[in-house]
Image (tube, rainbow, N blue to C red; front, side):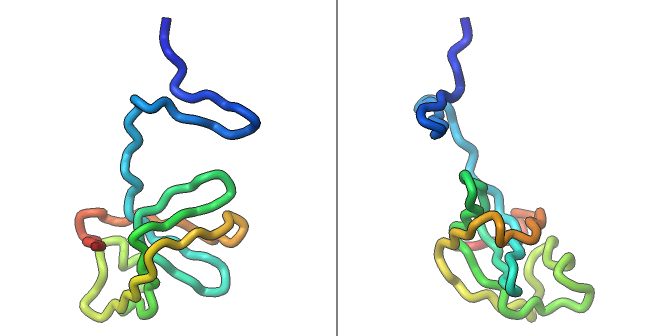
Length: 105
């Protein structure tokens, strides 16, 4: 008999303590009103949470935001902001990046 991975109580889902949870991957997150962040991104309930977040204040690209999927350019300007928690209704897009090229400390 297999053990359940999760259990739901009062509309809250709980994960087994012995189940490993992968670290969130680095993503570029575009929010409404022109905010663009990069950081370890996960969706929890009705929120997108970005940890080790940086606001991309200057893209520094010649071919648009998609160019940053391969990592920041020499002209990219990042402003460290810590953790960003935004409601999903403000989410425009989440863009996959090469996690090895984005070294966020």
